[in-house]
Length: 454
Image 1 (tube, rainbow, N blue to C red):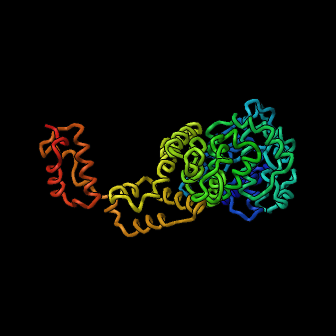
Image 2: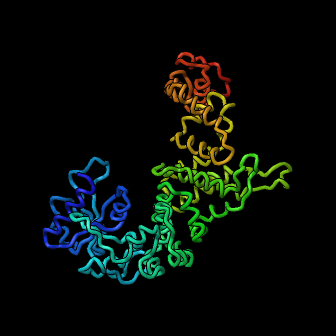
Image 3: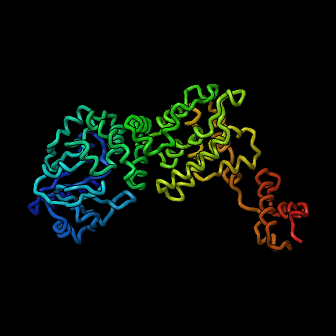
């Protein structure tokens, strides 16, 4: 069963039981725009207990916010997708007060869809559709704004944003993704309330920014974050890139901010999140290490910007509650992005170790975007591509010729020299100086005595 079929079945079941049921929100917006919805939401006058009663035990019914009227109906048979097929079913409601800037202080279930949509964020996300007739219910002017290409908050923009401060960033993301303009009053409300975005949890902010970076409109998204005054509140390290000049012989495109925007512009929809964050942060250390030609005597320099950038990247990732794995990958992208300039002159062992970095395809793509957004020379990119294509994988990542057990059998006692010897064997192997276990044994025997324990 596909997502739409599950949502249609849920609506039919609810209507057969005497309830109202409509597709609502982003799925209706995307259907009207001719896009395939990522997921489907259903709005109904049936209360949570009634939803559970109607769909259990045929479906798994999960409470994700029962006191707010939100349930998940899960298809037990799954789908062709890896993730379980789910549809969010929400009871018509009106919300009273948002003391914490996210959750309503009190929820009052209502009988009408018209009352329900007033609590939603933007007009284009407040449309309802009867899946049987395709009739669209529009109580807030959402269809007109869809046609006009406008992101407009429902009712009073400041009230909508104070209800959930993440909406400040969501407005930017929708405007960027859909290539829409933000309506004037909505735009001014974002600027006014920008400092309050800091009240949003790090996890929610990280996820929203990741969507902005990976939906195919990252450049416009960050330009809008800057124009709405959100950028210095969310990522002040990125805001500091503006006006930081670069040596024109390497960066004819302009300052660090422009260079970064050009790279973001080339990120396709659906790109890996870690690559997108690596692109955003690869030069984050430049503002702090900028030295003008008047100081260096020759040209603008950013000595140590990689090392500084890695530390800043790790701090940003910690602040936004990235997983350890994702933090390590983003930091590695920053740490290694300058090494591509040396690939033609690398020893065989160094080049092989470089090419077997975790998710090396992301390193290679970041380098390609870096070149295309500056000097446009792809010689080193082509060199690495050719090397990977022509070099068997078993040569880049060969099996070890010796282990610690082998050294024990040879009469060596465990200690610090073990690692030194094994590293020396691997270095010789990667440089094609030795290829067999027997050659490795002889190689170890030939090592200076300082590498051995007596």
